[in-house]
Length: 91
Image (tube, helix red, strand yellow):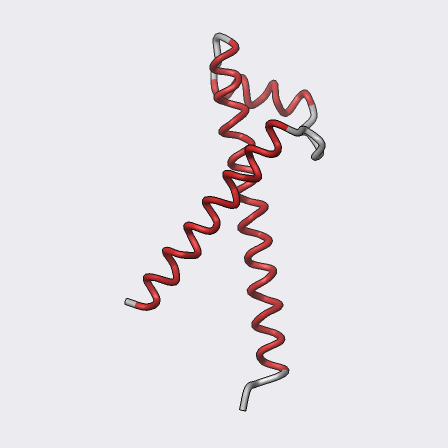
């Protein structure tokens, strides 16, 4: 039961972090943006017909990228933590 609670907490932290990152990316586009041909390709895949659907597509793409970035950062932190714990075990 404890392991399930930990996994749910990790998922909740990932979800909130990805949502906040997406919101910041949409409101303050200082982060690197995707090239225009990539956006056109996503538009063809999504099949948007008006500006509202384009905005929905942008939100989905940026949430996917944010989720991937947060997941990779979490994986990197867990690897570093594991390595530190292996080198300096508690007594």
